[in-house]
Length: 461
Image (cartoon, rainbow, N blue to C red; front, side):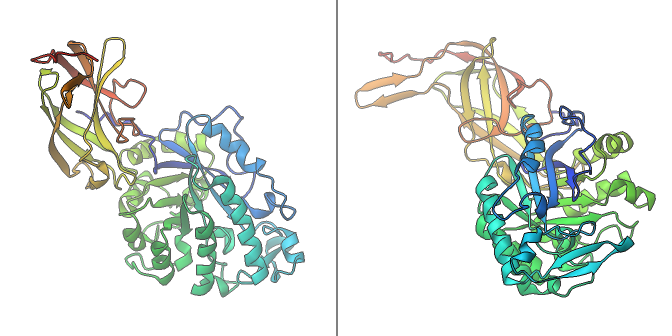
């Protein structure tokens, strides 16, 4: 079958829109409530990154509305959300709520540009760590394990939650301190994917893979995000592809670009670099880090190119089946499957063939339970490895229990044959790059005739 090139919205992959990018003003503030960016191809996730103080201005009193309101706009559209809650910002005095300082947490005041002052917590202070843990526990109680949440970042350490402190503190680079923050999130987010910034490891050699903190994160089931690429033009457009090679085989890797406007002004952003970063990182998520309509208008070609490679892209390249099959008799379907993306389909799924009548009623569901698409490995552009296999099915088999015979009724006749990939029970999960879908992630591949069983059982049930 011919891949039609469309953008696919599937689990564990897609474009993430920075609705909040550390402030409440960037970049969702210009969108009217009904504008859920339906025209942006491949958008899957809304990313909400804001300071802790906006959610817990008083200890134990939570303003989840600031998250849940924009989140529900996209959840209603079938999309998902992700979070980072930060404890230090360059633009405001108290990203960590002031009540944490008053409770005895140590910290320092630092002057920044134009006379502004920020309070920088001591990230290893026991009082600070306990207050962070209390907050993360409350957040996890609300969101952990939700199918509507893709990932949550460790945001309690360093400037902007990136694990560094812009050269003003040594604590962020101390391994034991970094581990404490990761451990807090791992203790409470037991089901939802956790991510850390590559900056936990510092500015790195692009080829180097092993750093103590990223190796530790890997061992804890945490994934990697790059904050941010294309701050500078090549050859310094990104630094962490070596680390990413350890993460992408088993969990989604996330790329955040520099703010598009700033990157463009430095001549650091291009559609070619955008696509190359996806290839180099084997990325599953890419960011919309700007005003979304402007970004789409200016980068449409680059976005389309990325969508053909980002994450996984499951293909049914070939399929052959008999024109007619008989009830209760085995028959073979031969197929060739491939993954044309850059990453595995991490959660996996199973090929399924569904017979439907002329009214769309389901007549038979046939799942190949031995073939899991999570094992389809990505390859070079246009050259994905192909898995060829023969699957044997039986429609409406006869059941003999003791001296009695049972069979499921099915009518002989012509039916439409659909293909899908999903759960073991035949429920479709993944969008595929084909037309002629039924609206439920099944795609028509042809027709098949069903003939009466050769010898009907003597008893009907």
